[in-house]
Length: 270
Image (cartoon, rainbow, N blue to C red; front, side, top):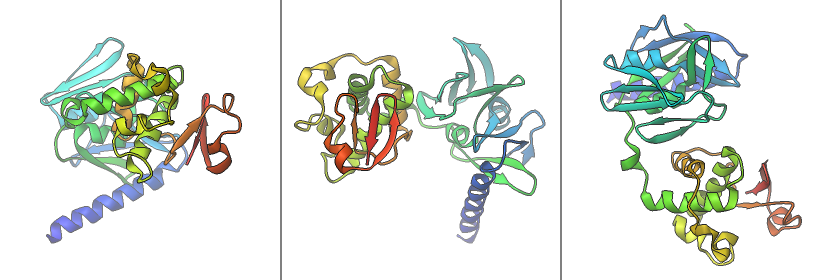
């Protein structure tokens, strides 16, 4: 028990240290995996987020891994793991799970960089920051992330992707995620129904229900946005309402709630 508590304290300390480091100016650092420093890997702070070159970390953690370039993305495979890393995208895909990368996947000097925390989640590892040796520290833990087939509820993806498409099909990925966030925030709130379908079909809430566009087949990006939301992506905090100010310049939400963000055509209110 004492050893377990000590490990938890160490993990917390590393997490806090990593967060503190991420606030520093952009810089290059080292990477350690399971106690071994990787000479081929680099950690770099970009926009207050610690990125690492993903492939050396994968190979160190899964020695049987292979990597290839397929359909415009890097794909790493190992026992129990398929990791797709599209350069420039705001997500990576691990075993069918969509994990958000707010500032996008980077490519620098021949290395593909992803946020350390996101990569750790994909690989089923922990990660922290060693401030003394200036390096990101990965430790194997539970094994690769559970598959999307087992994690995503098909009804949740079905309805969430449809309301995202109907309300924000022409918006950016962040805008689509924001609409999904509002739906999930309502599900979590005692003020609204406790299911995604219940929130969407609550009387007099969403025009796509009354005009029938809720039943339109969603775009691929809308489905991706729904899965990103279900895996924790959030661009508007605890917002419960959104409006298009051009369509409703004097809406109830704008008069009675706090504006959290404006993304594309929508303003979001908590």
